[in-house]
Image 1 (cartoon, rainbow, N blue to C red):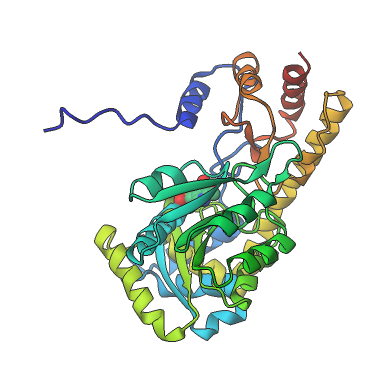
Image 2: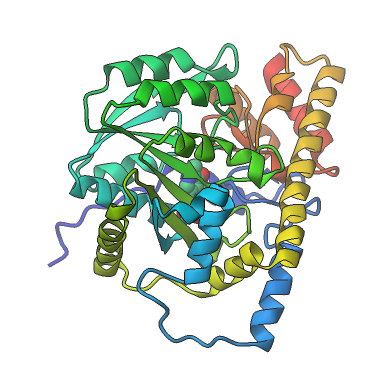
Length: 396
Ligand code: PLP
């Protein structure tokens, strides 16, 4: 029965990770995948707020019975309040719990297909997994240029042109903040322009929120665009992941929100989301959602969580500043100031394929093929070696 099954090659990053795992060089640096690491290089770090929430769940164990079909209600409500603030009370947002950010995006794609939207505009470069996820449900992908390699800023003209030329019933999948892989985000002014461009156009924005809080250190500030779009009376979707900003990666905790203009449609939309989820996954995992619910709804834990998120921002911001200073001190050819402007975990270093390979083969420094660096993988014990290697591959 299975003789016709061809091998499905893993994405290129897996090759890099495998090579990295085998590398015995004591100076090895791993800045490949997008997880937070502490100053000690610990990727299994648990935020203090999460630790405390887990303690509470241990003392007052809610058990493991099925939850509601739409997910853990307090988690969903807390997630709405987090990003929509006061507007969450209006009843314009239909939301269900999902299998983290990836699951949220998948439900978004399925839902949009069910209402006749199956064409997606992606900024290039963007998260690699968008492509197979959309293709696997028969979606059409169109690209525009997200990033300008020369200026190290967004290529807004390209997005503008794509929106102007887009046919009705197109979706634009846009990351909210801490863009993966470029670390470059749309400004408030650019979000205002996006809002104007899509107004009355039968174009839906799908906002992917995977790094909320890491761009500015403030969840409130980073979620500004969501409330702005809401105020402008748009209909749009938000796919929310807590993998990174609660460090709940493997607990698969996320939420999808569909923002409507007409509150009377909310029950229908929510029931459609539940039906899609039921067909594919039935119930969403509860443990991470219960932790999340505590961080979102308990005033005390919410404050600690805010500090946890800020401390991630603070550490990566510090490292970026130090990288800039060190590369400058080493008289590395080029202007490296753009590293200090990168938002969130990622820095799009601009190293070309050959330089990325040299970093890997000559210096045991592993990053994504496109030159993306997870800044959290750099710390005071490896930063000198990291900058030395960049200086070498750029100079010679
Ligand atoms: N969106 C972006 C841009 C990401 O980088 C990621 C994870 O790396 C996700 C979504 C989904 O993450 P998860 O499914 O682990 O929540």
